Each structure stands twice: as structure tokens, then as C-alpha cells.
Image: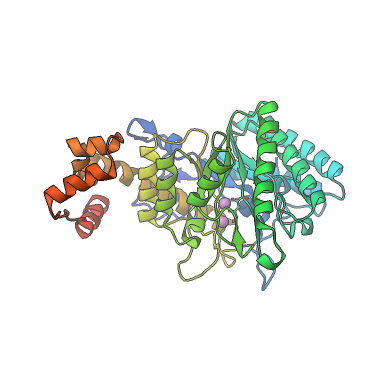
Amino acid sequence: MSEFYPGISKIAYEGPQSKNALAFKYYQANELVAGKAMKDHLKFAMSYWHTMVSGGADMFGPGTVDKKYGSDDPMESAKNKALASFELMDKLSIDYYCFHDRDIAPEAETLAESNARLDIISDLLLDLQKKTGKKLLWGTANCFSNPRYAGGAGTSPEVDVFTFAAAQIKKALEITVKLGGRGYVFWGGREGYETLLNTKMGFELDNLARLMRLAVDYGRSIGFTGDFYVEPKPKEPTKHQYDFDSATVIGFLRHYGLDKDFKLNIEANHATLAGHTFHHEIRLARDTGFFGSIDANQGDMLLGWDTDQFPTNVYDATLCMVEVLKAGGFTNGGLNFDAKARRASNSLEDIFYSYIAGMDAFALGLKLAQKLIDDGRLDEFVNERYSSWNNELGQKILKNQVTMADLEKIALAKGDVKVGSGRQENLEAILNTVMFG
Ligand code: XLS
Ligand code: NI
Ligand code: NI
């Protein structure tokens, strides 16, 4: 088997003192954190689309990295790409991957031919999985790139487009099941609108839910026992996307009775686009029972779009991992690096530098998250802050044993109330001492 990343050997852990750019400084796959190996806490996944497909093209210029894998023939190239992806995962010690149908096998003239191509490549991927032990974290269908989806897929104004999308998702579910994927993602790329002047919003929302219901019913009928995910994002490519943020999606899933089958796949950059922190989105998912999986990346606060950068912000990674640990860890989900190297990062090594940076940031985040939990001061303060709810009155209210009139009587008798300090600055300082102390 020829090498696609020649001259780069398996990346080893060398520790934080190492100056070797091609070594892990914090990620040590088998190091135990709270009794569990780092690799099992983090469940890193490679995103096929950014890593194997995109060469860095943007609207001002073409790609800067060759992603043809030695062949101009689309299927030869797709096969080589699959081989290259496993070489890359092996060299980086990444156990999982994620894809859209069109990432692994390019779309053909007809749906039947596209499906046949998927059969061929998924056979190859299955074979590679068996040989290496690598796993599919989740699959999805690209129902946003082809011009037919310009007006949406499930939310298209045209019934033929809805039908085509359903057929495409059916096939994507089949290959996800075939490859043992434990998740299936709906990211509503163009499920939204550009202007309400041409849009039936309520009708589109109903149809989006209808498509998801069809997918759940079909997926369960072919033995998919994993999680369906919605990946919230407020905008881009459309001006307004229906899956705006976690809160919106949770409301949507409950409204349409999809909440038993769906969880959330939270992406850091999408959180900030929605005006939230990454931490906020994961916390809400955890507190409502919708925590599923994570697209680990980061945005640039000075840019208003989805820059999908490799995550290196250790505060964000730490607070994310606090939520993951408190959720009891990932079940079917994991940390998918939905991230791309910058266009100017055009060497073969750059993709390795990128993953090393992201994996090290999350390894560090994991250790610091555990340290923060062990330190206990933040949790202790929060518990104390809410402790009045443990008193008799608090308990009565929580058990819904009071009326407004009861509360008025108590408030009138008690007189004015003084509220305790929120101590934010002190808590931020504690965070710093735990992280850097
Ligand atoms: C795009 C999304 C996409 C999903 C998968 O912004 O992040 O890459 O993760 O369709
Ligand atoms: Ni994104
Ligand atoms: Ni994503």
C-alpha cells in the first residue's frame, strides 16, 4: 500500500517539554483520567469533508492543497482517499471518523449510480475498519451542495426535491448502519430561508419534522439503534436556519415528538454564531437530556462566519470537558474535529499540526476539567448559592405544593429580602488558579 503522507511517522506522545512539532504534548491515549483512558473520554473523530476532501478553496480562490490522491478518475481518487484517511487516522491515533455520503463517493449522473458508488466505497471502508479497528462515529447526507437543494431539502418548496432528499438520506442511513455508525446527523444546511417574501415558514417546519420522522422510522426498521442528532446552527449558508441553536432545536424536537430519538450535536463555532458560548450550548443540552455529540472547532470572534478552525482555546476545551464529564461521558457521541486548516497552511505536515493542536488542547482540557471538579470549589459555591431551596419553603415550592396566594402571605410576613453575592470575579480567579496553579 503506497503512502499518502510519506515522511510522517506515527505521532508519539513526548510531553509538554517536547519541541518536536510532530509529537503530542498532552494527548496520551492510554493515560488514565479518573480511571478512564483519555482516548475513551475524548473519542476523537476525523471529519472526512474538511480533512480528506476540501483543499482550501474559498470564494476568492481555488484550493491550495491537492486532494486528488494521485488520480483524476473520481472513483479511483475516492478509493485512494479512503486509504489515505485510514493512514492519517492511524498516524494520528484517531479511532473514529465522520462523513457525508458525497465526501466518500462523489455524486454521479443518476441517483442509482451514486448509490452504486456508495456501495463500492462503503465496502472498502468496512474492510479497512475491520483491519484497523477504526469506527464510524456518525454518518450524514449532504443535502445542501447540489443546486437542487438551493431552496432546502426537507424544507424545499418542491415535492420532488423533498423526495430526492429522502432517497438520499435512506441510502446514507443504510451505509451508516452497514459501517456500524452509532450516530446519524441532520445538519440543516439550507433548511431555512433567505426571505420570508417567498417562504411558507410553518409548512417548511412541518416538512422538516416529517423528513426526520421518516428517517427515524426507516433507520429503526433497518436496525439502527444509535442516536439521531440535530446540529444547531443559526445562519450560513441561509440567512436564517430553522435549527438556530440548542434551545430552538429542543423546542422543535419536543413539539414534533422527535425528542425520544434525537439528541444534539453541538458545534463550538455554531454556538458563537448564535450569540452563545460553546459552554452554554453544551450545558443546555446536558441539563435537558439532549447531550449527544460534539463538533470540536472554534470560530474567530472578529469574523461573522463559520471559520471552522481547529480548537486551541483551552478555556473553552476545559469548560466543554467539565460538561462532558458531568454528563457521565459520551455514549454514542464523541469529539469530531469539524475543523479545517487555514488556506495558507498548505503543507502535508499542516494537517498533522492541526490535529495535534486540537487533540492536545482537548487532552489538556480534559485534565483541567477533572482538576476543576476535584478541586470542588466551584461546585461547592454553586450548591451553596442555591441552598435555600433545601429549606421547607423551597421544598414546598419544588413539589408544587403552594399557590400564589400562599407565597404572597409569606412574602408579606417576611418583608424585603437580601440576596447573596454571585462572586463571579472570585470564581474566575479560582478557575485560573486551578488551570495554571
Ligand atoms: C457546517 C456543519 C457541517 C455538519 C455536517 O457548518 O458543521 O459540517 O457538521 O453536515
Ligand atoms: Ni461549522
Ligand atoms: Ni459541524
